[in-house]
Each structure stands twice: as structure tokens, then as C-alpha cells.
Image (cartoon, rainbow, N blue to C red):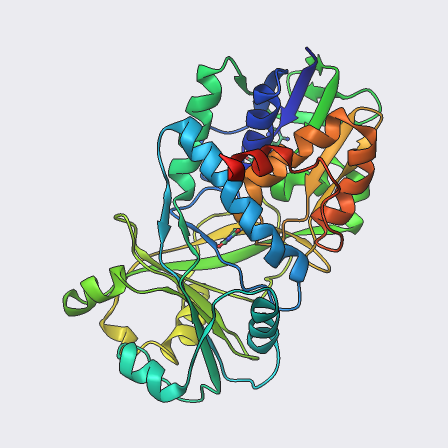
Length: 383
Ligand SMILES: Cc1cc2nc3c(=O)[nH]c(=O)nc-3n(C[C@H](O)[C@H](O)[C@H](O)COP(=O)(O)OP(=O)(O)OC[C@H]3O[C@@H](n4cnc5c(N)ncnc54)[C@H](O)[C@@H]3O)c2cc1C
């Protein structure tokens, strides 16, 4: 049995620790903050999972195995923390993300229902259809209850003897698969996985040329009482516009309605403030005001910042960074839905050099999975 150190207890570190412990390894996770970590990219009420991926067919095709990985995790955790909502995607542009998504989804046999602006107005009267040139709806897709997932996963790991050590790492030595903690202690193991989210570039200097931490703003709203029920049954909303589209996460399972935007924000220190200013909140509300009727009747509950780790082409980085060191980074605001799948793939790749070689291309969404990489979820789908 090999010993493995995992740096970071976000969805990537914990999922990889889960997969490694399932494979019989002795795992220790090192995390600077309490778990679930409110400063981490993974911790919020929700994260979305959906098939629509523009021209990025590789990620669209990763959704089915991602769902199988979630099924496996939820079964072992004893709780399903996904709420199906379906997807409503709207666009003001005849070409681009929505049209590309629809074409590739259909080519792969997914059921996609087209809507025009009149149908959107009739079926979703709380939305303003002005300017919509295209829309589609999918039954698949939903909300992952992110904070609860992280808490459940941490408890599952504790029950399996995985230690989560609360300590801040000062230095990573990829060549020796070791970590130096802030208090000077040296930790070593047979292998090391670095999954430090937006802090990754600071710990792995070579990464700073490829990944930048950006500060993204979110607002949480309470719909007016007469629309509260309507919103809990609403699909996730993806509103694509050249100038500032937004997404809305419906208030499922006791969570608030949440709105964020699609643009990457400027680079910022991930140790920076989590509170958003009134001005920052207003930039997000301005996008939503164009589409959600009477937004001023909605009560603003809070506005906060959360960090992305952005790779230029929005492609994940899962690769070897030393003889026994592996890196997970560049999740570019869309990694959560793939956490358990990437963790299982990472654990497989760590054990087989041929899989480790193929891992980066698959994780970047440019290559199909090599045979054997997704064995755990293939088994899961058969059962
Ligand atoms: C606003 C927002 C909305 C998003 N929406 C979606 C969505 O709808 N769907 C989706 O799939 N994805 C979404 N994402 C992206 C997704 O949440 C991230 O890709 C994912 O959570 C990244 O997980 P991680 O484990 O890499 O990072 P993190 O969760 O940040 O975990 C990294 C951990 O490493 C720890 N760490 C870092 N440095 C050190 C150190 N020196 N010592 C010890 N510990 C350290 C940190 O404390 C942290 O807990 C969204 C992200 C944001 C911010």
C-alpha cells in the first residue's frame, strides 16, 4: 500500500483522496482552512452540472461518466446531493455558444427542445424575451449541493481513515513529493497530489504562466413571495449575450436564487476579501435586469466573491509534475461537476504510466479517455 499526500481539500483534493483510499492507498490531506473551506472555489450552496458545452465536445462527452462518478460517490456517502432542474439556454446571437452546443448535443443523440422567444415568454413569464434569437431546453442537468457535498465527502474520508491535517503549506517539492509546512515541518510520502485551486500558481511557480486566479462576483436573491414557488421549479438559466451574459441557479433544497456572470474577472490574490462591494453586485444585477422581469422586487440577500483558476483555453490541467508528483489545476470556473470523475481518473493514472501519459489530453477535453482510465465508472454503469 502506497502513502499519498494530497494538498488541498476542495472538490479535487477530496475526490482524489476518496479514489485513492478506495484503491487501498494510505492517504493524508493537508488543508490550510476548515473543511468545508468558505474561501475555496468549491464551497458555495451550489454548482451546476449540464451537458451544453459550446464547441468543447470533449467536456460534453465527459458529463455521462461524471454523472456515473457522482452516483458512485453518493451511494458510498449514503446521500444524493444533486437536484435535477434541467437547463434553459437563451441567446441573443444567432451563432456562437448556444448554436454550437445545440449542434453537438444533437449530433451525440441528446434530446434538445428548441424554443422561440414567444414560447419562452409563455412558459417562463418571469423572463423578458426581448432580443432572444434562439433558446433550447434540456431535461438533463441540475444543481450539485456543493457545500454539503464537501462536508459529506470529508466525513466519508474520515470514516475510511483518511486524515485531514489542518496546516498551511509553504513549499512544494515536486521532485521529492514532499511539502514544507508554515511551521517548518517536512511531510513526505510515496506520492503527492497538488490540488490547491486558485492558490496553485503561488505554490507551483511554473504554473503561474498558465493559470491565473480571478475574483468572480455572485449575488444571492430572494424572489418576491408570489414567484417563490415558480423559481423553485425553474430550470437553471444560461443567458448568453455578447456583452455580459449571466447564469441563474434556481433556489432548490432551501438555497437562495443565485446569479453570476460568464466573464472572467481580473486577476486577484486568492487571500483577498470575500465580500463584494455594492458596485460589484450591481454589475451582475445589471445583466440579470435585462432578462428577469421586475428584478427590483427581488430582495438582495448577499453578494460575495469566489475565485476561479483560469487556464487560457479553459482546459483542465491534470499532469505529472515530478517523478511522483501530480498536479490538478486550471479548472476555469467549470471543474466542480467533474470532481469525482477526475479524482477517479487521477488515482488510476497514478498507478499506471501509460494512463499518466494520456491523462493530460483527456482532461483537456481534446482526447478520448484511454482504455482503463474510467474503469471505475464503467463498472458503475454496468451495475
Ligand atoms: C463563482 C463560481 C461558480 C462556479 N460554478 C461552477 C458550476 O456551476 N459548475 C462547475 O462545474 N464548476 C463551477 N465552478 C468551478 C468549480 O467550483 C471549481 O473548478 C472547483 O471547485 C475547483 O476545486 P479545487 O479543489 O481545485 O479548488 P478549491 O476548492 O479552491 O480547493 C483548493 C484547496 O486548497 C487549499 N490550499 C491552497 N493552498 C494551500 C496551502 N498553501 N496550504 C494548505 N492548503 C492550501 C485551499 O485552502 C482550498 O481549500 C465555479 C466556481 C466559482 C468560483
